[in-house]
Every structure is written in structure tokens, then in C-alpha cells.
Length: 432
Image (cartoon, rainbow, N blue to C red; front, side, top):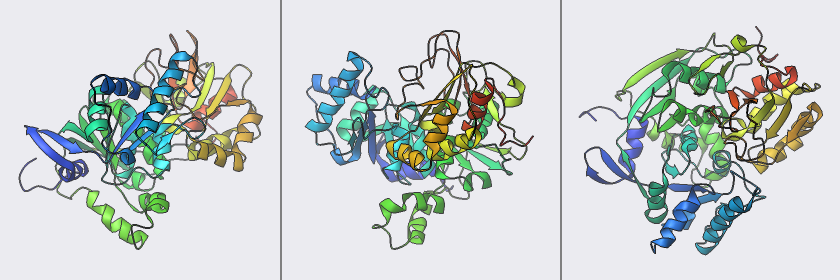
């Protein structure tokens, strides 16, 4: 970083958490939290055991969940869950969420208040960047880094370059955060932010709920970013208030504290990009890369076999409410099957209380338990070779939701409208 210049949000977090600077721009950071799930963590656990290092740096700062295949679908996935379960018990990890209490990690952990502005977080999952919505630095890591994090509570990163993306204008009815992030990725490409932190800024972001901000940050990695960050503000404080009310005299006091994680006015960025979304129509992907993006209208009439609404991108209550508005009083086409998976038990319960689950069931959807399974083609919504899925998830790689299948990424509103029509179409919420 040049001398005598302001700092970006990521630079402030790095400087506050620096433990060591072993070489050049490589920094060892202390971790505020290490998140774990049953697909990547058992490999790290078994390796630590084999090396005689079956320890954890701080059981109160490790949060673990079984979420990718839940309940287990076979002996292998049952063993992955057992390894996690035994490990959590052995090390007195209080924040372990087993079947019945579990949910999709990147929805469950924020919902539990485990993410705060200025935090450093790692997980063996690429969509850990979701948590940057709170003004945190959160990154997905490989097995070796996860092991070190579990054992010593540290992780090494290069000092971050940042890209500021300013989002201006006003979203049209029927256009949502998912449409915005798909459009951005379509413009800058899957390598457009490689090894950088994206700061999402501007009045459109400031007006977004925390749920919408998590959708933005969730897909930052699809542009190559290490993390996406939104600036902490009163929306952040209100979301966190049930968890921080004993730490601050007032919401305003919390806001004043959290503002220290906002960037300086003279911060230096690798790039500053501006997107006016006033005329942005609903978006979706085509092909097998997240940057293959076009308006929904350009694929109007394209047949699909399955609709999936859920995931760490769009399985929150706000997403289910939007989809339910589109579905209310209607039935999905007989030519498709629909699956909805509320991302956490709390979201599921709220959807029950609000009549949203009934709306989905009356429309002909299968209502699944909270799980990541369909998103990566492991369970609960896998598609067959040659099938097409309209999905609110975050990746459309070849075979992502099932070998030989095609995935079109879209918002919950577009997915619900597509379910009704039996082919890709805009929702009635979009007025053009």
C-alpha cells in the first residue's frame, strides 16, 4: 500500500488482525471464527489426527454444521457426519449444528449472530465470501489452510487489492440483488476480480436488506474475488442487534463503532467500476460459466425440467416471500417439477407461520429440508443427463447439479414464473 494513503475496508481488517508478515505481501492473520461443514472438514480432521495434532485453537470460535448432504444419503456421507459429530463432542465445540438443528452454513451462521463487522473468517467452502455482507473479511480456503485455522486460529493471505463497484440508480419492480450480481459478473467476467476483494457500494446497496447483500457477496467468488464486502451501516446493526445489545448502549453506539471498518475517502483501489441499474431487466445465465449472462427475455420460451429455489444464495425468507407472491393461487406446469428448500429451520418455521410453505405446496412444489444437496448435485434435487434446471443457486458449471445437466441461474421471482409457465419467462412482478 502506498505511503500516506487511506485504507480500503479489507486493508483495515488485515492491519487489525496481522499476526506476522513472513515475506513480502504475505500476511498471517488471526481468525475471529473458523467455520466448518461435513464435506471438507473431515479430511482436515483425519489429517490432524494422523499427525498427532488433534486439537482446536478455541472451541468457542469454531462453528460447525452438517449441511451438504442432510440427512445422509449413504454410508460415505453418514461417515462424514459421524467424523464431524465425534470431533465436536471430543473438543467441546458448542456451536455444532447436527441434523434437526442444521441449515445451509452461509445462511445459518449469520442468522446465529456469528458474523460481525471487521471479523476475519475462513471455511473450506468457496462461498464463505457471503459473510462479507456484514463488513467482514471472509474467504474460502483449502484443506491445509483449514487445518492450520482449526489448530492455530490463523491463516495466511496476500495483502489485498480491492475493486470498488458502485451500484447506482433504482431497481425496477421484479428486479433483485440476484439480477444485479449476475449482470456484474456478466460484464467483468469470471476472472474480473481474481485475487481481489470487491467492495459493493452505492445507494442501491445501501437500500438493500442484509439478505440481499448476502446474495451479492455470495457470488463475488464467481468473478474470481476472494471476498465481497458491503459497508456496515444501520441495516447491519438492526440485523445484529439481538446479539450485540449487551455490548453497546444503543444502536447508534454500535454504528459508530462499526463505521471504523468502512473505507477511507482516499483509499486506493485497483479499479472503481460503476453500474447504473435503473434500466436493468431480470437476468439469467446460459452455457456453463457464471459470466454467460443475458436478459431473461432473450431466453423466453426455453424449456426446463426442474425448478429449484433455495441455497446459500437465495434460500432466505425474503427470497421465499418473493417466489410465493408469484406462485400464489397458481399451479406449476405439469411439464416440470419444483423443489424448494428453506435455508435454515428458522426460515422454514417462519415460512410455515406466514403460509408460504402452503403456497408452495398448493402450487405443486416439493418442500425439502434445509440442505445444500441439490446445488452441487449430491442429493435432494439432482438432475439427469440432458435435463435443464432453472435454479436460484450460484454455479452453472457443466454437471454442477447432475452429470450432463444444464443449469440456468436466476432470481427466485424468475424461477417461480418459470415453474408456472414450464419454460423460462419473466415474472409478473416485472412490469415490462
